[in-house]
Image 1 (cartoon, each protein chain N blue to C red):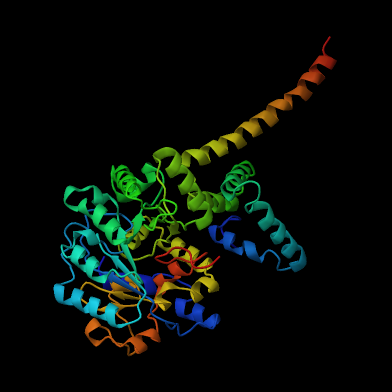
Image 2 (spheres, each protein chain N blue to C red; image 1 turned 90 degrees about the vertical axis):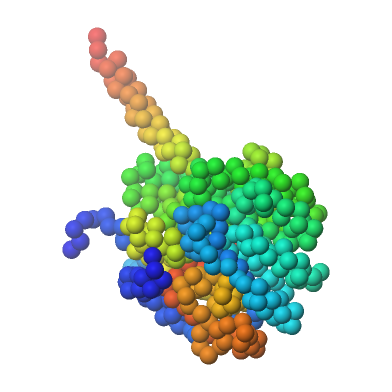
Length: 111
Length: 334
């Protein structure tokens, strides 16, 4: 058994996730390529979105893959950090927005 | 790093399938030239810059320079064979005192003549005369500009070099280079400023075009994306930064059979400063001459044999077959 659940070399295994379900994987990869490839948004813009999502989701594979892709596409370090801050702000906003539930309950309960 | 040490590191330092085995798996082994349409001539290893990724390990102290007799041999071969493109490189070829004569002798209306320039040298007073000479001769320029931002570019080439390159590009644009409708071609070369692969050439070209026009008023024809080859200083960087294994793994994982089919060595021949023949500039820097019975020096030039020669491959060749492929004219596969 490996020493850690997450290993760098596991990223290379991603294309093989269809091992036990090839048809589903085939459709997933088609969808993945379509969704992350250039469309109305450029490949560069989509890659920054993917990096922000990857950090929010704490996915080490995606962070590795999309940081490298950002570098490859000439995205600058401060642009990557701006994208990460968008993710961080959304997460903070999400948490704070849920304070509404807390405030509603408090107001309902208190005399 | 000595050449022998580089070859040993490349062959023994990485686990996994060898390049020749990978080619065999796709029916491309042995890899053979299909034609020789381009002669790439490396006339000097001397350079005014000392770039961190340079596979030539070029610099001011390098003394290797093609002598007059070898330059004449090159011209004789170009004249007497159907070689459509001549690609002059270095080092900084402008530092070779006989370059003006060499270019004047080889330029013909039916021949494509390319000069690979680091651009910065065109800002140095003794070499600024090339701006007019190149335009007069209609020589195509392939200029190095690793990144469209000065921070990354300067990290690779030295402080202030980006600004100098931009000034040189401005001068070239003023002479008609890179302008729409002009016969003067100005292509740029991007290569990653670190241990990662270049992204899509179309995407990077769009970004270069917009940024250079908006921020500097610069125009150009095409952008060529080159993968850094693990040879020379870049190999040393990979080793010192502990990126060697991972980079080689990335190159292997990104192997593209279409790019392997179109590798530049199948249609070009590289000539070293000493007249020796190589399959490419990378092999030249590793001391690997043309192999498998084909002549290894200009003086024994045998065109039919060289056109069908077997290419000498090693593990660094994975750099030319990764992703969309990489060659002296950029991506080789879509």
